[in-house]
Length: 436
Image (cartoon, helix red, strand yellow):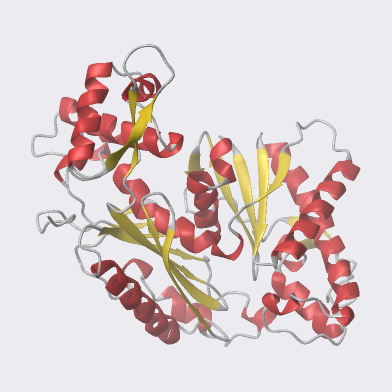
């Protein structure tokens, strides 16, 4: 049975908004049908969050009657989305049957188009990685990115085709906004930005036209990885900060990713902070610098080179050469100071439970940087804010592609109050899951 039948319009989405037509939830579009589909997704999402649960536990989580939940679970089990994983004994009465997601029911593919590499990942319904591809380049030439991206997709799709019971939910793409920007800082060709502005990422790669494609900012995608599969699932309100070639951010409020009117919320790079103390950074006469000029990997690479340490990728810092230790510490202290300033600014405006800091740095270096950020923030002693927890993300360099891969799955199975809307406000999330 094909997951995306010819009668379903392919959903191509940019920044969470419809990029092309999508199918209605039902032929009649009644509220009762929409409510049933919403409840299906709510129950399925509850199983995903609880990992495994009985029908009575799901009824309490969904605030539905046991009979309604029993019917929903039975339909989802028949459609292959959930499976029985045993019974819970030790309580009075009949032992409870436990259910959890069937990870083999769906796979999803995520691609991150980075400034130095393209990464592609395939995950199952529970978020476990089933395939991985990575291709490095000197700069993101659209022709090169298209070639290596299509090759990665072909490899992952071929792997998925070998399984008769697994279908592909869709493709998610995470990419920086202004992908060709800041060419001077990075030594990229001057026309790169113009070339990328002509690219429609939702139609960029070669995929089946029936396969939904979703596009999101790479830093926002990283936040989604933490929200759906990582430490962010324990918070309703957090800011995710990604230290990559440039620094970026993703904002989650009330358990939902917020990208703003232009899809550019939490674009932390331009945030003004005090001037850098590094002797390798130009423009020391200025009073303020953008955060990206202090808390980005390209600044670290330039600082190391200025002190005789030639690296092209941060993974080359492991193991750490003795010559690199001092300039690395200098950069970490400077970066931590800038991030502490940024966190104070962020939490002065948005009341957050946590700041989740992640990076593409080797893990030991990343955790050292985290501890310095925590220390600098404590030293600042900001008055008038409730200090958020400052914790590490768990995905590192894989956060953006994994987060991008969650986009099609979330669009298909996550509950969405918009499914109850009629008329021009409705969003096509497809038919009942049990008929897929």
